[in-house]
Image 1 (cartoon, helix red, strand yellow):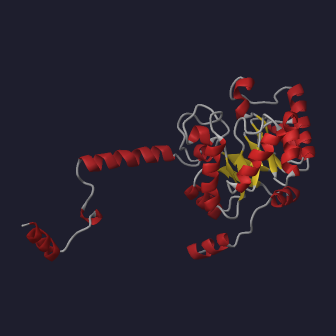
Image 2 (tube, rainbow, N blue to C red):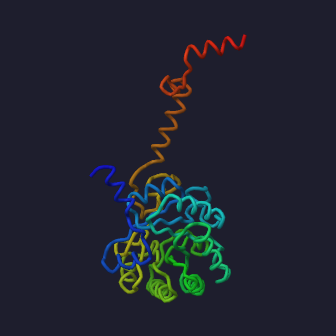
Image 3 (cartoon, one colour):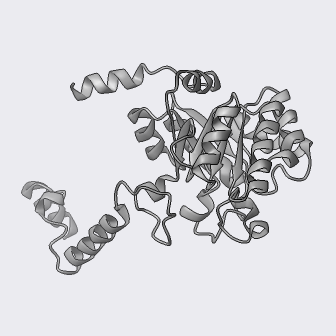
Length: 292
């Protein structure tokens, strides 16, 4: 297949919607999702055929350099959401609601969710938590805004959880997670991310709710998978979660490219003649004459 044919097929790809998610679950077809925070990455993912792009609050750590996801603001999230929306046309775009943008009240949650669609170009929003977020989910979905839930390891609760720790490993915790998933389903969520929970629990939950589950460190029994792209590409060198499969090591490649560039400049191998703009001898002669 030629590059032109691939490009044409991608340009004709139908817009992925929340209905697409549900249909894929019904057919047993895995849903694919990755994070993106900028235009060129969104373009590449959309062309590759990714089902959904999450503008994740992981932006705080992998792009902005914070220690966790808590400091990132709505304005920062919207800035990056707009960039992604300009690049991806077919993928379902999900904006990750940052810390304190939905926890205070259902009204706050609805207002900020609306900003993601109105100002950020997103198709849906994601928020963390179970039963304690049911009112917010109802308010947002009641206004016609699709909501993706997030259970298990919820990074915005990192201090309450005692760090980035797997969840649902005891019988009582597993039962509560199942109940939370059912509550989010009843509240109107169109799908749920399950992060760092036992594989057998994630598979059980996936089979006992009608909406799709998207796993991250939750095994192959979920209806789809999501990863942080900087982990997948080896761009984030502080740590790599156990559940990540690294498909490239771009941090190492970038380091080599930067080192080679510094060496070439310092040794004056760059720029070479082929990288240089020239004047004709005639114009140079005129220039020198005019200086006299």
